[in-house]
Image (cartoon, rainbow, N blue to C red; front, side, top):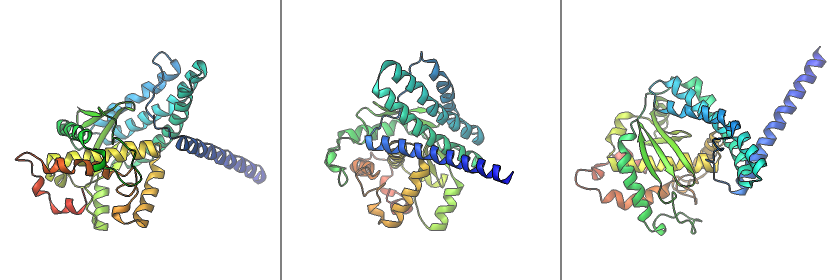
Length: 321
């Protein structure tokens, strides 16, 4: 019996390693191919895609004040992404469409990463202090996005990004959905951005002495202190919202294909090895999120009377926001 168990255990490990190697290879292929179209969906008439579209309805839970329901909705939504993979594969084979075949691989990689992250978060559903109202800032976020489109790219480009012409595709706008924002990104789909109060982040910031306003997540971002968030002027909140969406969508979702389990270790390595101004995810690379801050620097200083950009709390300025 021990020998039989040992053989079964060995076979199980080999299957696990093979699956891991296959997923890693798929992630490498997608990354090397530079594929960023992670929002394609299967055709509505394709029955293989119906389960995915049903699970995608889990996104409606994002606006709930019930933490467990909210987390389970994120699991369902991420699983819907994963189940789009076989549906797109069938469409690609039937129509001989290489774009659908590529999208199938992308959905497999991103859906797996997103689902694993969502599942890991479920047991910690209680570690939240409720939602932050992003919906109220719809108008000013759209104003910021329009301003970004009007700015000469030379004003915000980071090193090694001389050919980059935009931060978000032209026409990117948001609309309020309860306390959340729905981002409409031309060519890339619609993405939900949520924000929550995180006591865990507050404790971490207190222990480290850091003063970050927010921290990105695959579904949006968390804020350590609701009172401090409310101290921010509307324009400053808009800068933070657009900045954190860059982390969420461009970096975690696109560059790391929703694998936040890989993103955060890479972020931590950057924080240890680089100066704050040289961090690859912030200000030290072609895809650093501080392109947003650079593009909106003049917009913040031209705030109308009554918008308190000149009285930004010192702790926010210390965070570099």
